[in-house]
Image (cartoon, rainbow, N blue to C red; front, side, top):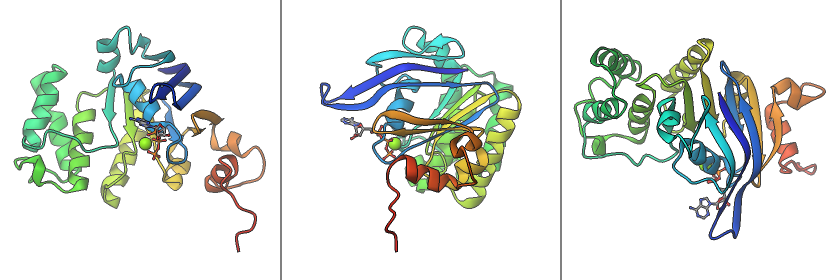
Length: 245
Ligand SMILES: Nc1ncnc2c1ncn2[C@@H]1O[C@H](COP(=O)(O)OP(=O)(O)OP(=O)(O)O)[C@@H](O)[C@H]1O
Ligand SMILES: [Mg+2]
């Protein structure tokens, strides 16, 4: 479903190698959690998958479509939630959602059903008529999520999607992720919340300094014993200290 092959990306004319030859395959039906310390290269990778950052080397395909050679087909199969809340603030929530639905050429019955479903789910019905600039951080995240998922893309590409969501909304989003994947779709998301990753993901990938240092199920990452994901993460990223008193 999502294939990342030998992908690299540098910033500042090659001075900062943010992503260094990574390869990941994510299958239909999988929730894949992308973990790593701050500055590891998660957002850079996600932006290349989304087609908003050019790839220096390597290749990314979504549902068989190359994101650089066939960007329209690739983007039709994907719903992207960035880690920022840069959004059209002057629009109302409902104007924004209809704009997104227009971009994806959604039929009116599907757009009505899905807009209602997510506004209801995220308790945003009353706020939908207000300008986005009046929204709280979490409300913006909810309207961005709704816009990204509206057209029922088979790949959900989410950069720290739980950030700013209240516990109920985060819980509902996790349930939606499970339902989505149970239908044979795919979720690729980054998070720093290891408890969420541990419970929700079928497979995990850990990136550190631009390189993938581990990929697999939690059982595979553990190799032996029953270590928590937190302890595996700290071990692998070299942040575990023996002298913690
Ligand atoms: N626009 C940019 N210009 C220059 N360097 C950048 C730019 N964006 C990211 N970087 C660098 O690339 C590296 C990877 O950053 P990236 O944002 O991908 O990390 P991340 O894993 O998403 O981190 P976080 O957990 O903090 O979100 C870092 O060293 C960062 O400083
Ligand atoms: Mg990031």
